[in-house]
Image (cartoon, one colour):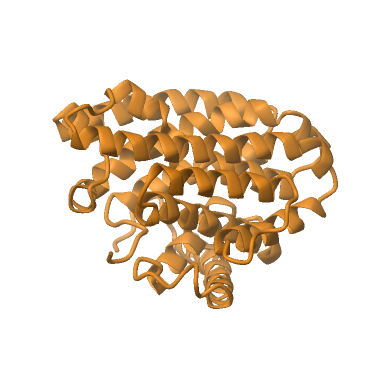
Length: 300
């Protein structure tokens, strides 16, 4: 890569060193995710849970939160992996609405403190996250927000399951309904858990404000995800904004408009929560760039 006039060799050296440090955080995170998956083989045995998925998760979190410790990122990475696991359970393993309802009920019971059932592999993994989060100072005050975000995520995934069935019968949701259901991406629910784990009392007390900003980012990521995965979604039978709108360029324009609005929201948020605003900004930028070339899931 050639340097511009304003770039100096020292600048490039410092930038590369910082990128190397972040990638080292990701490498440690990937190894931990592989250990977590090995400890739960009945949950992560499907082909889409491949080494590249673990690497992609770890890189996304390391570049979104490069000032976090390895331990803080370990928790965040596992929270993301849980999001992929519950998505897989609802989208591809559930064969009936009763199956979906069981996943929802069992998951919420674990969040509320219940011991997972002997056959509930998803619940056992979530219980590990719950117990670690519960040791965070301030968890008792912030737990309700996390519980609400888990419920919203599950409801969104269940709603998409219904929409897939309805779409097969010629009754797809509208684009507006689909975008409003972006919680099925499981982005904000992870962010809330991460902020509980890493934030102070001020952050915990203002979580609803951070959730609103995260939801804006989540809607953008819903669209940039769809722009990258249209062919895969068509093959897997998933809903996609391009299918609903009928024009990929129009979806890209809508994503750009939402991104511009996000920039304003995050700039305003930075004055009160600089670390959390920086995290959301980096999450939006990194994930948008990532989806420009590839996807998280491995082969089905």
